[in-house]
Length: 112
Image (cartoon, rainbow, N blue to C red; front, side, top):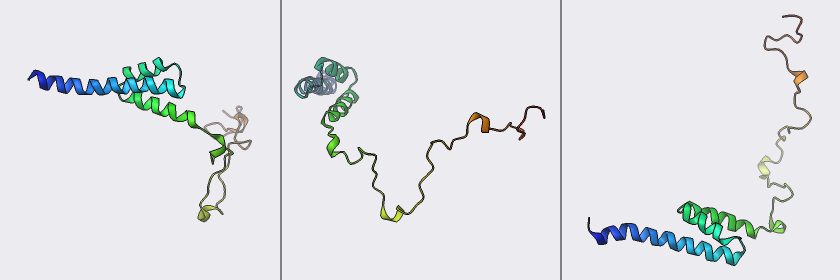
């Protein structure tokens, strides 16, 4: 294999990787994800996926509760499903240990 081809196959992806790492270091310091070195190390140690981890963490900085339509647990229900009965919640209606029967169907221990 020629040296130029080998340099291109290894060098171009490595240059992209270093460029992404440098961008993460610069951008983390700019947007306030501290320490920026930690995010650059993550982006360098975990190629490509580390960059996406950084992007997901960066997107959490822009969360505004006032603009979140689900902040009060309100869900949009399609009008065709509005008259459906709600599912039972896991509240007080759950069975306790005293409500369970034995595997053979009897409720008392004296019958065994």
